[in-house]
Length: 268
Image (cartoon, rainbow, N blue to C red; front, side, top):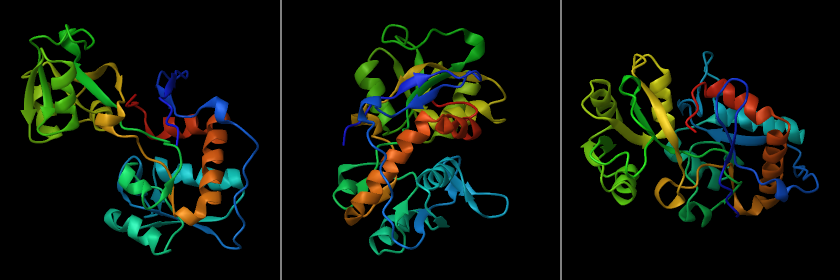
């Protein structure tokens, strides 16, 4: 699998949209295999905004609605069933579903058992700072002597130490504690998962204190490859069709429309 670093587009709303697709990989349209039954997607309903239970209990979220768009693009009938997150891959292996659409990281271990499409979402690392301080965008020199909150033992803590050695890393047991310290002015920045930081910045908890600052960090070694649709190895034709549909959904602008619906503050 070729992983493409996302290029970034700026729609009118000012929200940064990631692009994970390589235009050079476009080819003839790939049709989904005809099995005579609905393709069964499995997800979890407790991880907003990627997958969660809607007001009526029906699964929704970015991953789920993207799956529905893919099914529409492929002209196939699909169902979506919510299961406990830690049972999804076993349920797929036991043929209780055909595709997993959930935030399961793409890893070598996963690929030893399953197939996966190209990533349709990744978790960028981001810095966030108090808006009133007028702090500069992060760089090795700009962070010299600055207090940066990180979660103890996290990839973000390791990355900060490796690439921003002059920063004063201040470790916290969880993200809420780091965010609280930043809000109180006890640190200058927080460096953590961009998705959670974007949700915090855009929510009521932050009380408008802070904003994402600088760019995103996407090094696979630290922050992983992201997530894709996962299928069984014997369903390679279905996996290729899903990949092709994702590319075409991006080309048609539907990915952008869906992204803006679920990410009013982009983590990118």
